[in-house]
Amino acid sequence: MHDTTNFEAEGRPAVFVASTEFIEAARSQAGSLGFDPAAVFVPHPIQDRTDAELHALAEAALEEIVSKLQA
Image (cartoon, rainbow, N blue to C red; front, side):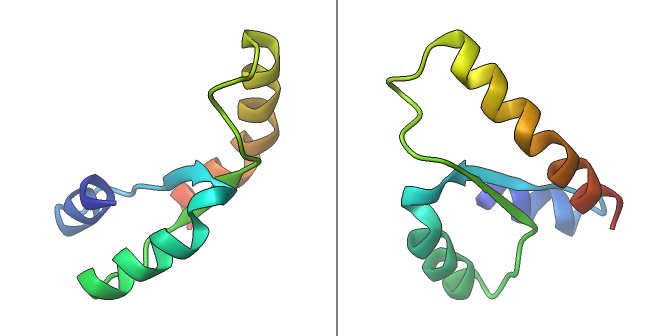
């Protein structure tokens, strides 16, 4: 979240990516920072996934990430 805030402050587009487990925490932290980051949430959990599953999650999220970077 802080990296996203810093990049945006520097005029560099950024997208915050996290798993769905952290939606509420991300909203809370964004509110505390006074910042509304572009965010993409992928299905939770992440840590127990195979490489193939992680690649599939990334592939599924890619279009939304790129779209938010270009907004």
